[in-house]
Structure formats: structure tokens, C-alpha cells
Image (cartoon, rainbow, N blue to C red; front, side):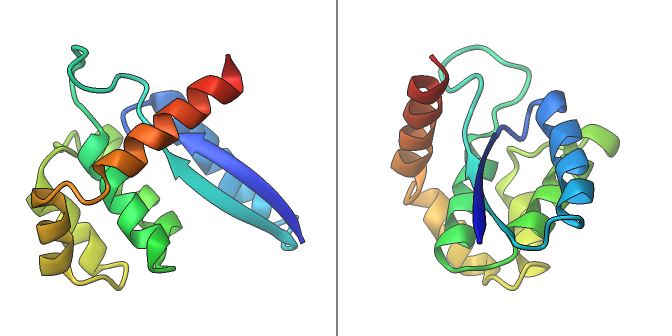
Length: 132
């Protein structure tokens, strides 16, 4: 099985378009396993119209449990770029995870406790070192 690492930021329109294209391409390559790696183009405290760190933390939560991150990605990107909703709203993210098979209250607790914040920072470092 082939493996593809995909770094992405929920606040990036190019990542949104790229993941849509990737989804179409993957239908032709069913033997490819995708590892989705959420990161931030503009991490806090850098000024940005919206920060994606909470959405990325939830993605890490889903990955760790083997839940449907592709569906979550679709929900977050659609909410942000199509519906113009705030993807830094924990309540919205919890609504999405319940559609992906996760316990919304557990996700809410993990966000309040910043359980996956260090993982997102590590992903940022990993992508910046990889692409530098």
C-alpha cells in the first residue's frame, strides 16, 4: 500500500481546493493510504482573520481514534469557505465530530484542556522543517 502525507490548514483556501482535488484523485488509487496532518499557516499569536488551531486539534483527536477525518475535513472546510461560519467556535466543531462518530462532550473537554495543542505545534514544526 502506498502512503501519502497531506499537510493542510483549515483556514487556507488552497488547501481546501487541494483536498477536493485529492478526494477525486484517490478514487483512481484505492491502494493509497492518506495520512492527514493538520497544521497552521498562521499560528497564534500571529494576526489572522481566523485561527484554525482548534479545528486542527479536533482533527488530531479524530485521527488518534481512527475516526472519519476526511468527513470532518469536508464539514470544516464547507462551513468556513461556503457558509462563512467560525471554525474557531468549539460548539461548531463539537457538532461536526458527532457526525463523525466522536463523543462531542469528550472533544469539548479535550479542547478546554488543550490536549492536542502540542500535537498541532509539532505538526507545524514538522511541515515547516519539511518544506524549508
